[in-house]
Image (tube, each protein chain N blue to C red):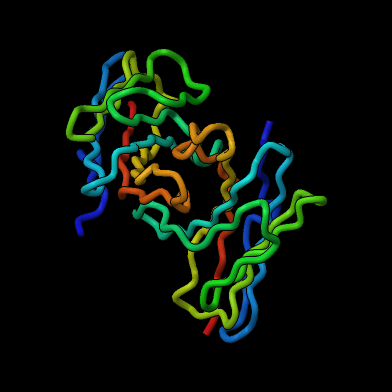
Length: 117
Length: 115
């Protein structure tokens, strides 16, 4: 049972345009969501997160939107740069369980983003 | 500030053997989590340790075990290796204090190949 799904295995975007990566989840207990970026032969790197009490969080070129009713979140990268080419993972956690789940993230399968110059 | 350090980076074992992987968290981080990454299953949570105690465990058989030492360093062990255990094993550390962002800092991983 895949509780976090990234239905697009890959996405190709032109430099300077917007990249939109999508993620759906099924577990309504999830209350904290994160995006990670991963280059080959490296561990995932944290990008941005959002709590379920918010619907938007912005950090520079990265914005994450959360639609709780649809159990959907998206990551927008504007403008996209060739250095953004990597695998992007959506992750979710249940943080409101007495703080017992900080280290337990449920990841999606990842989306390979390619930004062309 | 040094990042999360995992050793060894690469190793090859044969079926039936056991393996121990090591993780040194970022200085000051007391929580260590382990994940398995495979092409088919993606990133899956193995377990989390905090203050030398296992706090969470994923859906893996008992062949997978771990521990944490008083200096927060952690080891994970896989016994009776199977071909399907071939994977990238990732360690992550976090501050694990109320109010933090929940951000996990990952190491570069240990690539295990089982022949």
